[in-house]
Image 1 (cartoon, rainbow, N blue to C red):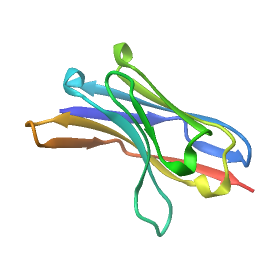
Image 2 (image 1 turned 90 degrees about the horizontal axis):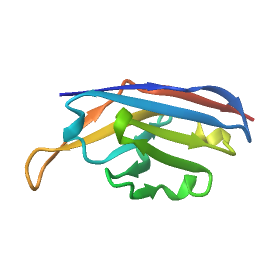
Image 3 (image 1 turned 90 degrees about the vertical axis):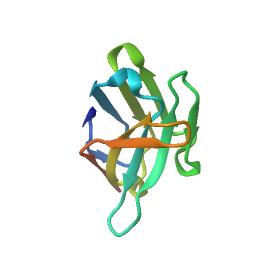
Image 4 (image 1 turned 120 degrees about the horizontal axis):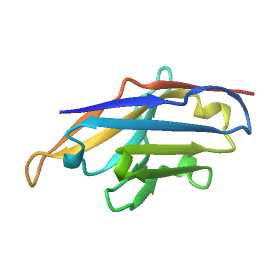
Length: 120
């Protein structure tokens, strides 16, 4: 079992910055990739960024060059630095941790989500 707790959301003006944190607890040594997803009102949840245990990263096109994901395995924590925020970045941001169950199957753990609101 893995528990995820996010922090760092809030209200910011367009062009501003926020840093999200997600700390994992429980069976953290079983975690492979971690990442951030977001869901805006009336829209489906979408990937923002992921990072492997070794540090390989992947970003959605909409956030490339503005957001940076990082990870501290010793602290079991993943971060999302968000710069040059836009109103369209407004969403609930959720932390995700993937734990391999078999060679072909992965179990997803989710945090409770943190609200990010960007005003114009």
